[in-house]
Image (cartoon, rainbow, N blue to C red):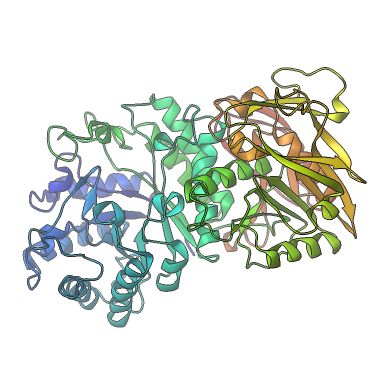
Length: 625
């Protein structure tokens, strides 16, 4: 299928008043500009109050304006994603005046009215090629949160089924955003994947505490592809359209935003998504109106400058990416079969321990993903139900006492090791039968050294002294949870030791990371929540080399990716797709805001060069043979 490159659209001179102040000349010119940028899709919003002024009435004049928009988009060669029930937009809610205090997800009259609206559109535009897909809503939990996950499922299932019953040819999705990854917001991705043809995600590192560094820095440029990977995992392997990402020039310089866009777009391509859409088309000239009056930073998210109509940094990056994609055939590309997996906790949303929240799980997984990428891997996020036998390495970060790894899961992990796999697990309270035997240690006792207390570990092979930034020999962190499991090595190899003695626990010299051979595989254990320790540590990936812990796991496993580089900042992914004529390509992505000269290593594949200079925040395509 064609890779979707597109933009979210409100006209810059009218904003959310687009339908009541319909300006066909402006919209037609905007559609032509979108096409000139090389994009093939535009997402528009059917503001609920405009299109359904009462439960029984659908405003045909507004539908007629939508008809005009379809004609203009089609003339430009751009397909349309209509979004229903636009109750939330850019920090403000836009309710229908007739809702009152009724629940839009479970109240019978509310459901009936919404069914009537989607039925009207499905019947009118059945099989209309100008429409790419139907989108049920925009970040609907902000408008009104379902009372529980079952209400959210009911709403999505009801509306998606209605659309499909009248228009079976158009796919149906929903504009889900990051709260479905960081909270139990009523829209769980596994529930949505039962009803939708593919999943969407919206995420912005500018708003995320888990991205403390600059926008075009290492962690921020990994944020969106990680959210896509986690969406796919929680959605049972569903396809993912990254429907919203971007940044505002009220917060960041244009060159910074351009670099962020470049890195993110190429990273999404490497992650195997079906498309990427920027937020949003243009800066707005109506900053004194809602929603921009109360959220003024929303005015500057555009790809097009409202003053002169020229492309901003985001627009230039999108245009450049689209050109690269077209040279590759324009199709969705898929990475080669992964050798490494990161396991999502079993009770991701509802652990009985109140501190084991989705937000906490998100942070642990995010930093595990970044570590794996920086160690040269192209990891796949999976759930406990997925088949692990296809992988050579499995990472299970920050395991708490219960409801993340069940006893049956633990047995499967032990069997994975016995059968030749390599398991890495870090500790955050885990107590699993036979844990000491698998990791080759004597479990002594757990301690709580205190959140925020320093924790420093030294690579055993690095010599006696610790080094500062770039040495890769010592990691100086702060405890995220404070929990640590004191162990003694029985037949395990000690890879890292504690380099700092804690005032109460005297941890200096004790094992921190150990590895034991078991059966035909290896089991590696870290005695504290390493990934969470890095979660809000500003500049940790630039100051130190924490990926060396994961790199040691890779070395033990013997696994080699088809291609990798000698720089932790530059990933390499072998991609395949129909548009490549049977040949693969290697995509290099530099996640740093500094250029990198890299050596390219390969296993079972040959590239047309073994050295490359990758510009800052850039993607570079190499041919294979």
